[in-house]
Image 1 (cartoon, helix red, strand yellow):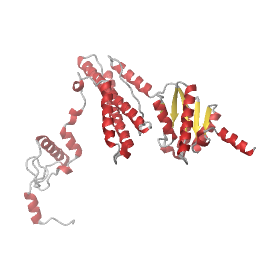
Image 2: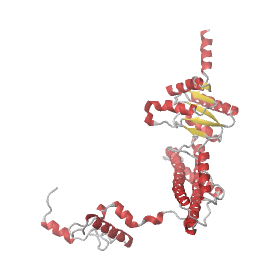
Image 3: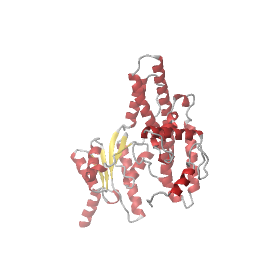
Image 4: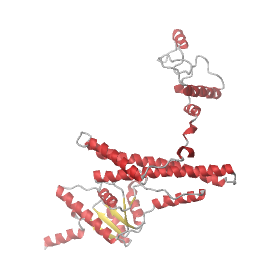
Length: 383
């Protein structure tokens, strides 16, 4: 270990051909590299020569595994992977019915196989991952569109009326529109799978990070500036809830019996339905806790077609994060704050809402009942 190489070993190594060399089979019996890999190998060797200022000595041996990764990638010439308008021109996206049927078939075949087997316990996790698969596919398409919009802005700034620049601009716009159609298809498949998920598990599907929005596709766009403006408006509208905000807050609860749990669930749904009758255009604002009663409220909202706004915790704020979230939710000036049993952050939310003149639907009593009912019952016992 760490000793010098003996003359005999050096002689044997010098006589062995380089493993993976484009022109010789390796001493391990591997065949020579194909022409494309061989070209990459040669290009990487030339890069190394330029870097060190000389050709490597015969006893140095250029090992592809130690070659610069950047040099190898540059030699592969991966520019053909950039999407082009001609790659998608003339092709129409699948119909909505076909997307729904395909997604439903995937879901049914997968989970019919898992049910009544040892894998049944993984159905919820697998379902979440399946919905997330389509969600991530749509997100990648939108990221590509964002890059294309930057290129469109640059082409607009450089527009001089020439035929070449005009053609380049039209190609970029057409490509962006086609990719946006693909993103819309993946969003539709995600929403279809999410509907199956909530029917299967009774829980709303919420991404681990980011938003769950659908931009849709606009009508024909004939101008670069019109395309950019239309996309800005769609992104803005998709991230803006329409209607009257109603804040919901509550913690993670445990119950002694199944009857108590059922009674609490009935009171929770009764409260949400009563508020909806009073505020027909409501959208639900909550903290997005997917392990507490906020998850039940989120599922109720999705099943009833009610928009949701989720305020997650900013972990960088530490203990202050929950109170900062209260401030953000109350800044929307909600019509009601629905409060169930929770921690000190929930208690503070109720106090601040009352100070701001916001009506509080207080359900922090036993099993989701008003505290006033508990106090009245205690008074009757004393009497």
